Length: 240
Ligand code: URA
Image 1 (cartoon, rainbow, N blue to C red):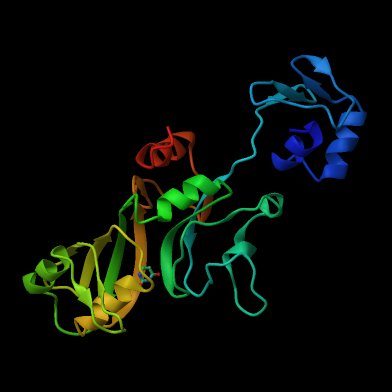
Image 2 (spheres, rainbow, N blue to C red; image 1 turned 135 degrees about the vertical axis):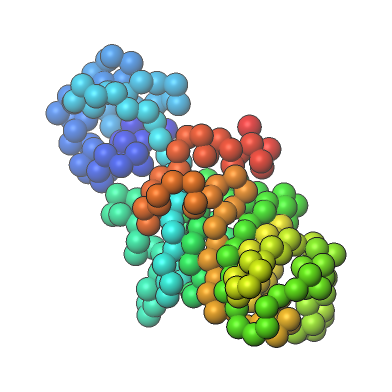
């Protein structure tokens, strides 16, 4: 990839800004000063900028704790959307959400410009598990509902009826809180399951996706996934 594009993609400024850095002689590739912005760099090259070495980075993996009342979209003319939550240096990197959370669902949303990983995390073929914390109205859940979920229930709210994959429901005895783990992502799946049980969802929060959990450490609203977290996602989707 071109040197100027690589540096711009890695957050060192706009194409014009990085061209200026290059022409001022501040950029070295494998120890050699390079003044040609079109110079071709390879993944294994070591680039130093003003004496600091950097790795070539064009893939970004972010973890957002999505707030309530935010659309899972990079752009929208009317409503608050996740695109607005990205810092400006990440805005032109073709980053998009992996899957979708409803406007009023909060919690774990991964954003990336790694299209293959995104595809695999959302494709039913890979069956990546997603756990949601639910509060609901109505009578407390019983073993009957948990059993129905675990045997793969049929959603009756629309034609044709949909047979869901088995899911796991764990409820807190004595409270109107439950956790449900799904291995697919049908539209509004959790809300529809609970509606069918006459327990309308009050709040819905995704707390984990595969090996990534919001609960392991205090969570900023938006952070980059660590290298280990990215590796764990690639492992469960067969990319490494
Ligand atoms: N299921 C839902 O009903 N809504 C979400 O946002 C995610 C899963």
